[in-house]
Image (cartoon, rainbow, N blue to C red; front, side):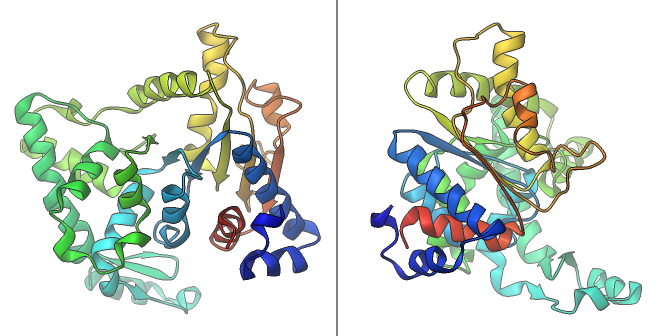
Amino acid sequence: MSQHSAAPVSAFLRHHYRHFNAAALIDAADGYIRHLDNGGQMMVTLAGAMSTAELGLSLAEMIRQDKVHAITCTGANLEEDIYNLVAHDHYERVPNYRDLTPQDEQALLEKHFNRVTDTCIPEAEAIRRIEKAVLEEWQAADQAGERYFPHEFMYRILLSGKLEEYYQIDPKNSWMLAAAQKNLPIIVPGWEDSTTGNIFASHVIDGNIRNVHTVRSGIEYMIYLAEHYTNVTKDTSLGFFQIGGGIAGDFPICVVPMLHQDLQRTEVPLWGYFCQISDSTTSYGSYSGAVPNEKITWGKLAIETPKYIIESDASIVAPLIFALVLGQ
C-alpha cells in the first residue's frame, strides 16, 4: 500500500490508527483499495444526512477518480447536496443544538429554517429554489408522456446549467454534480420519503402534474439495479460500502438474494466486498447494527467476502477512508 501512504493524511492515519475502530478503518480502506486494484467496482450507500454534512467535499473527488461506480442514497441525500450547492451561504449552524428549548425550535421554524442536528437548511434559498427548477422538468416530462427516475430529474437540472447562477460553493465539492457529469448510476429507494417527494405529491394533488407515475418508482429502481448488477458482475466484482443503515443499505444489498432465490440466476456472484460505518448496536433485531456475518445467512455475502464494520461516526470516518483510497 506504499503508493497510497506517502501523502500527509494517509501517513498520519497509518501511524496513529492502530487499534479498535481506528484499526478497522485502516483495514477497510486497504480492502477497498485491493478491491479496486483487482479490477472491482464499488457501490457507496448514503444514509442519514451525509449531504448536509458536506460529504461532497471528499465523495465528489472519489467519483471523479473512478473510485465509486454507483450510489444508493435516500431522497434526502439526493436533494440536500444540491441544496448546499445553491444555498450554502444561507445555512445557519447551531453549535449549542443540545440546549435548544421548544421555544428556540419554534423561532427557527418562524425563520424558515429546517434543523438537522447542528445545521439549519434555509427553506426559501434551498428548498423552494430547487422546487422551481425541478417542477419545470416534471411538468415537461408529464406533458410529453415521459417518465424518469428521481436522480435523472436532478441530473437534468444540474446539467442544464439553470442553477449555475445560484452556486455558493465550489462546484467541484458537489457529489451530485460530479455524479451527473459521469452519468453515475444512482438508486434512490423510498424517494417519496423526502422533501422533494412531498413536493411532487403536492403538485399531483393540485393538478400541476397529471400523471403520478411521471417519477419512476422504487420497484422500478430494483429492476434497474438487478439489470445493472447482473451486467457489471459478468466481468468484475461489485463491492458494497455502506455509510449508515436504513433503506439506503437494506434496499440495494437485497438485489443479490432476489436474483438468486426469486429469479434462480445463481450464476450471479455475491457482493465482492462489504464495509459498514455505523453507530447502531446489534440488538433488538436491528439490521443496521447486525454484524456482516448475518448477511451470509440471507445470501448477500459469501464466507470469503472481505467484511469490515467500523462502529463510529460516519461524518468523521468516511472522509478519512476516502483520503486513504485517494492517496491523500
